[in-house]
Image 1: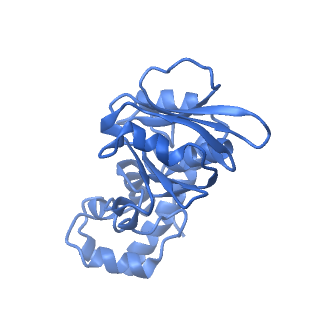
Image 2 (image 1 turned 120 degrees about the horizontal axis):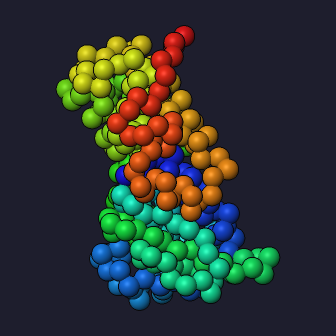
Amino acid sequence: MPELPDVEFARRRLEGVLGGATITAAHSEDRRLLRPQSPRALARALVGREVREIGRRGKWLRILLDDGGRLFSHLGMTGWWVERDVDAPKERSERARIDVARGDGVSRSLRYLDARRFGRLIAANDDIPEWRTLGPDPLADGVDLGTLAAALTGSRRAVKDAIMDQTILAGIGNILATEALWHARIDPRSRSDALSRGDVAKIGRGLDKAIRQELDARAGVADDEWHDDWNRREFCPGSGHRRGTEVLEPISLS
C-alpha cells in the first residue's frame, strides 16, 4: 500500500501538471472509486475550474479549486496517477482521467490507474472526515516529541501498531514503521507505554531518516517506472532489496 513518500512523490508530479491549470474534462465510470457520488457529479465539480493548490496529508491528496471546491484522492493499494497526451488511448486499469489546459497553452491528461480498485476519488465542497481526522504529518508538520510521547505512552499497543495509527501520525505504514524502528533500535513488539522519552526521540529521528531515504530513492525516477516497479511488489522502495530481506544496514545513533 502507498505510504507517505509514495503519495508525496505523486503530489509533486501532480503539482507539475495541475498547478494553475484549468480543468477541461473529468471522467470516470468507476462507481466504486467515486462512491457515494456519481460520475456526473465528478464532471460538474471539476470542469471549468482552475487548480489552485495540490496538498497532501498522510496518504491522502487534496486538490483545491478556485471556487473553494476540492478533490480528494487516495491511492488505495495499487493506485497511481500518470501524465499522458490528451489524445492518448485509454490505459490498462484506467479508472479516471482529468484533462487540463495550462497557461503555456499545453493541454495534458492525467490518468488514474488502479488494478485492484481500492482507491478513492471524492469531490467535495469542504474537507472530508477522512482528511480532518488525520494526525500530524511527519513530513509537512514535523514530529512533536511531546505530543508523540503522550500518544505512545498512553497506549498498551505494540509500538509498531501505534505509530501506524493514522490519528497519531498520518501516512506511516508497514514499511516506514519497520524502517524507523530499525533505525531507532527498538523492537516493533515493544509496548508503547514502556517507552522512555529517549526512545520516543529515537523513533522521531528514525521516522525522519526513513522518510527522507525513501524520497531520495524516487529522485529522477519517471512516474511510470516507479509505478510499474512498485506495483510488482518485488522490491522495497527505500533500499532496492527484494521484499522479505533486510533492507537497512546497521547504523549508530548519536
